[in-house]
Image 1 (tube, rainbow, N blue to C red):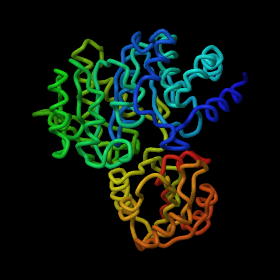
Image 2: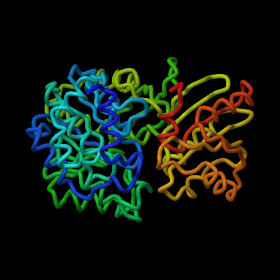
Image 3: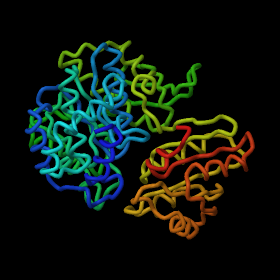
Length: 429
């Protein structure tokens, strides 16, 4: 098989949640356990960090990976979904899995995969564990796909688990209250394994405390130990954060420019503290350098990523209520004459709450990512118009961006987002 034939097999033969939604979601871990067993249980041969949460789990995973890389470790990183290339999902020290390894994995295991019929995500998780074990990583940072309890990644016993925050997303699978969603995320808490909750929320604290008690797992709320405040930009143009840790004041640069990183930092820093206590050699300098070079070290894209300067063009993958709230707040901090919003969303979520957060004075272009889950752009425009948002429909993401560019002056602002899949289709990403 060629690499392209292998991709066609994976994308077309295996149910893929990112493309088709609920039909690809399996409510137990039996396929993952069966695939891992077939592969010789590679997940048991590697040390891991497990990261869950509604928002911030991708940034947190990449940041921890970057720090561990600066500490000199060989670090695996598994994340999802990918933006441009399938191989983005599986990396070692920032380098994507080689295409020939993807082909090799499928060729060697296709007969078993055809009989098991796992989902695309289940198969990808198995591939990641196999690759990290084969390449003998020192440690791998594993990002949960959705939820936690029933997520395919939840077959590992990590050094530390991190849960970033709980918000409204995937309610049809995870529950329609924050405590119910927290209960699913808390499923990654393992017996006697420390867990760090990045932000303390009144609706969910009791859920995490109860699960940790049941599992006899040490539990820590990151923001009780670290208070992070963005204080501006460094000379290098990176976000500058002031960190209060008891009577100590620390300053860190981050090349991830979203203000919302202030919510992620307490969990990142305390998880690193736990790794240090467990014997991982991580210096303060490693932490400082790692946080300042997350994008450079790991290749993270789409988190308040600046694509152009005059006009300012920014994209962000934030797509749920919490994520969009922080995006809108950060947009409001910039001086601009006119704001243009290129927005597309998926069709299996209630988009009304997200649309209601968007600024009324912006000019909108509604688009549609090229996946079956994408909400029809005309339907999205209709829902937005009912909430007082005015704009036009240009279905192709890049055509929508070009249309905005033709109208804007140097002092205007173009934002692109609403869905990970809209950001993924930006040709200049």
